[in-house]
Image 1 (cartoon, one colour):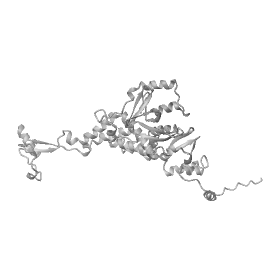
Image 2 (spheres, rainbow, N blue to C red):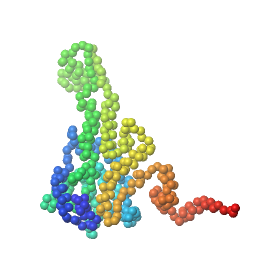
Image 3 (cartoon, helix red, strand yellow):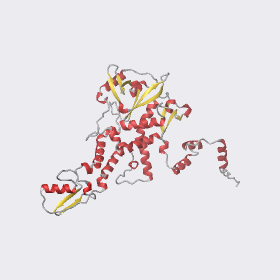
Image 4 (cartoon, one colour):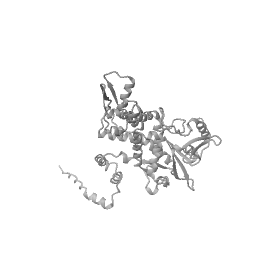
Length: 409
């Protein structure tokens, strides 16, 4: 198991097989209930599978928001607090996998963590035992077993057993003593199953709920067979055969009422028919489950009003409390694979940038105090000033006011 190997490997590259490792192995071995294959059960009253959950448009939208925010970010490598130039960054960060570029690698890792709570990297080593490639495995095809003879975890993937030291296992939320992580879908299967049932019930309301489309009534008493006959006539059914009447016999579908019969349709407004309020409530719950601001899910929260300032604050809270929960795990995993002394970080400044006017006001306050012109230009993704630009900027600045001349009294 990747994280277990790194736990004992440390930064020296050597595996420490001490009593601590043995104690850790005993703890993991006693958690056999957590080392199981992923379930394949479908939707029931108390359960919903990952694929069924994603088919809910609110769940898909929540997942898409998290993945879209993550895929916009670049990855920096720092040493001693300084960001390394591109030429000095490890190739593993620039090209983490031969099967996908960096953006796809980030996106698929975040999707794995959101949907399953786990991401698995199969590490491939170079001639100097450095990691040169990361194969991202499908988390739904990975399950874990404990090898009691060798006293370590083994990952099973598509019929192949992979030793734990070849796997980097990242978890979204791992309970103490557990092996696998817990994602939003796994944590709230019953809630999502309820949302799926609401959607299904709304779509089947007219066909499968038993709700009549109308009431055929009479001001005269009707015997059972007579009532059945009038019902069949109203529905265009031949009472003698029980089959629909040929449309050519009544092409315009005219209904004939007699014996004081009257028909009252049972009408539902589109809002009631689609269970709009119930589905809006489900949207709010799903937004809360995934940590998505309600306005991004186009869900109105009763009693609240959104302004520019609190929308911006909600977006910043989303980055800090939701998105970073996924990104930080990936940062730490990548940091453990690059040379010692280097730290991998996502550059989230792009997502945290305020509006243009606020940024320029902040730049104006910082210039000449704690930031230089080139540092401000870097924040705006601009190249440093050239010598010619510096001369022009210096020439454009007003000359300092002359010092006051002191006169003798």
